[in-house]
Amino acid sequence: MKHSPAHRLLGALPVAAALLLAVAPAHASAPRDLLPGDGLRLTVTTGDSRSSDTRGTLLLCDPPQGHSRAAEACADLAAADGDIGAVAHKDAVCSLLYAPVTAHASGRWNGRPVEYTKTFSNTCVMLAETGAVFALDDEQLPELPEMTGPAGLPEV
Image (tube, rainbow, N blue to C red; front, side, top):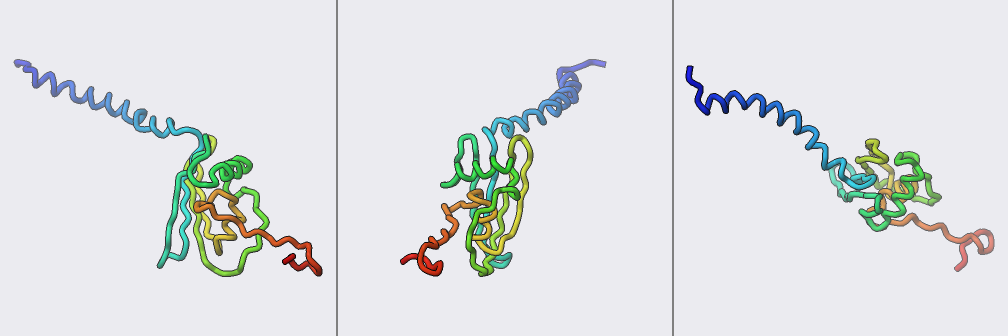
């Protein structure tokens, strides 16, 4: 039987395919490992499932960037070791108005995967419980009035 160059090529195909399969998974994961520091994709959805508005950003913490309060958000996350549910709650007076917002985060913190989703009764409650992490539009907690007037009423 005569072996032509085409037979040699066909014989080499299984070996080449095996090499590509062995190299491809290592190459595919390389870009993820090259991301600097800790990072979370954050979204805030306002409203219910029938009518909603979603905003989002990528928060990177080495150096802090992603939204206007990135440094504060990274500090809140660092203090909670990346656990958004453990972020120190802020003192706030929030209305009882039901205007649901759903906060979602996914990404990595100190090499560990992070997944977080929670629906809050309104934006004020979300910010009080998650600090600056989901303050995507430079939202601030309402400030409490100074209680220095007579009978505890605010000074005018």
